[in-house]
Image 1 (cartoon, rainbow, N blue to C red):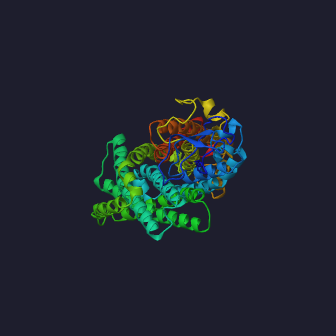
Image 2: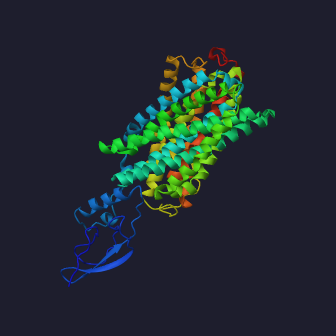
Image 3: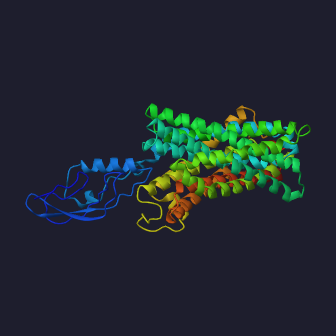
Length: 514
């Protein structure tokens, strides 16, 4: 009696001896197998088949199954090199040109969104509410960073769910939408409230001045902005993902750039409009501030109940707070720098460039972190040492000059900084934004700050993603909030330093204080 191996099992047809060859389980619905099995060939010779555990995850299960199916259909060979498992995942075959071509359009799209946000900030910085309640500037990086963290993770979760078939039926679709929308409303309300507290504290520490009406104004503006922005952007993301699936486009390729391009502009416009409207009521009805805060806080139990009903969001509801809260605190420090810099008439021109440098750096490092995480997911699960040699703290040469695909993508992303920022600076100049003349010395200082920011972020991303992976944390959920927040802090700090140096050396043609 003889038995045949399963289609995905790879074996030597000549039956001359046991040859181990990796195989995978048939799919996510079956238990993974690990061990060896013996089969009898036609000549009664024993053939040993080694079956190892499939390390597919929710993101890559279909891609890995497809790779294994393709490998099982290939011609059998005695060459040992063909017995090492499925072909390498597609990221390993990418060239520098293909990486740059795929990243270029989303990069420019998101960059023009940050340019529009910078133009809005350049206009509203002269409004009375920004002049009298300067702590509103502290909210800008915190809320823009919160928007990016919530909407990008929402787009990632929904895109993954759509790609693995969890949104195919109307019931599954509705459950996924309600659970994720409720989750981001909970996160937006809580983190928006904490951001207002941070703004009050950071505004009070330097000069010791505290105003209760201003504190309530900041709280109401922050919570309302975070809630409405997350609601609007979440609905846009859901529409984009559903539409992409219907026309056969991978949502992963379009959802995140749209979130990045629209998020900064929508969030900043809402913050300006809401804070201005509430400021007008300061002299007439001060009780509106606590009422606004109480209204959004009273909705929290409803959102929590809806988020708990979905298994996909229940775990994030309990464990996903640390990265967004710490990222908010880091971004608030950048907001404090922005507040103290823009409030000085000599540095008023900095406002239009802050969202641009922060947004570009955050978008580029998010791409790199996502790519490294995908590469690791293709080779194992979080917590497993899937690399040939364990990595500690990478050297800059390893991050930027090694031959692997992640180093290649780091070089491509770094090389996009100068041409991208030149396009954005030219756009700002054509739109007559800001209070700064684009002289050669200003462009040199600006580009130095932008290059240094991205260089540091890409290096930290290489270390942080591997560090989180080694400790069993999924970098897709934990690394991007920290990296984008560091991008806000580095971008704002380096830009402020550049403006300060320009002012000290007396570059009168730059007109930084005009």
